[in-house]
Figure 1 (tube, rainbow, N blue to C red):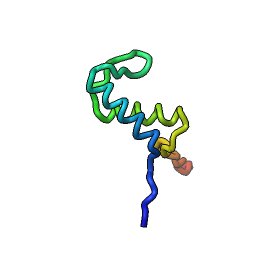
Figure 2 (cartoon, one colour):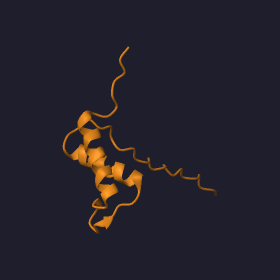
Figure 3 (cartoon, one colour):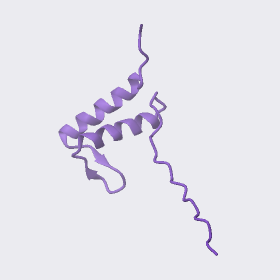
Length: 75
């Protein structure tokens, strides 16, 4: 049985491009434009570019805010 791809082909191309840029030292991040050295960061940049271009990429995992339980007032 064929398994369904989690990421689309377009997304993998964007990540591949970002990885090549990282290797050659031309990949830069954010407003500051610092050079990216981390492999994980390069992948994240590739995926975010793919998201912007409308490729099949799962949503970002965001941490859920913990709901603060109010302690009962003591008399």
